[in-house]
Amino acid sequence: MTKDSSAPALAIHGGCGVMAEHEMTEQEWDAARDALKQALRAGAVVLQRAGSALDAVQAAVLVMEDSPWFNAGFGAALNADAQHELDAAIMCGRTLAAGAVCGARQIRNPVLAARSLLDAGESVLLGGSGADRYALQQGLACVDGDYFTTPRRVEALEAMRRHQLAGTYKAAKEAEKHGTVGAVALDQHGHLAAATSTGGYTNKPVGRIGDSPLIGSGTYARDGACAVSGTGQGEYFIRHVLAHDIASRVTYAGESVQQAAAHKIMGVFKDLGVGAGVIAISADGEVAAPFNTIGMFRGWILPDGRACVGSHRDLYYFDL
Ligand code: ASP
Image (cartoon, rainbow, N blue to C red; front, top):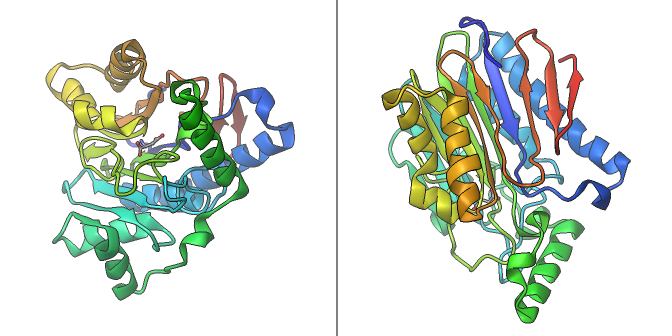
């Protein structure tokens, strides 16, 4: 999965909280894969026009935030109060500029608020009502919380509450628990960027913040090293400062992104019993997308300019 060093690269994920293959119809899987294709195309168009990695990851995440198939924006998970609290971050590998929001309740596209903060260059992370107010002041689209709710998320909350009462929380399916969307890119100017957006996990405590908006945990990009976006139980990503740790392994230990990402996801996290996945792109366009759950919505541009998407083991190839 290594690309010509001048060629742009892009990878996306729609979370490692996917259902088992038999739990959705083939039409539903097709629809989810179509949404991934749209997200890849949105990012690829930016890169093909010599745009920045930053704009590309934003464009890809935006599409997934607007899709009901993924746990971010429209279709985000519900917390213990049956409300949505959204987290997102975006980071530029060239300048290390970053923007993030957490616990936002009204921002239709949290990645846009994160990007606005990055561009403003003052605060990196705004939380809760402050993030909502900032988005409103910036003229970003704001909505009532109900906008984000889909029947699938209501069912997932009910399932998690049943697990809680029955004491079977650990046995809950990954799809009932969580999910996230993210994108990483390398542009033709050699710059990296990463963005991540999530509703967190279903039935999470009110006020809980995950790894996605924390720079270095669920989202990180540094030119010369790699760009990383994670999905999985955020508390572990925070404790391991996972995205930054992968970049450090690449920089200081000379590992490839595939080695560094696999070490954490297929080694350390798997041994800990933590369901997780990441996407990462190196400074020379190598893509890594390991996951230790039954599946992870994912996709990337291939060295020949075509692209692929997948949810479980199989990958589906298509022309951009
Ligand atoms: N990492 C997200 C969080 O903990 C959830 C996920 O990706 O599944 O908020």
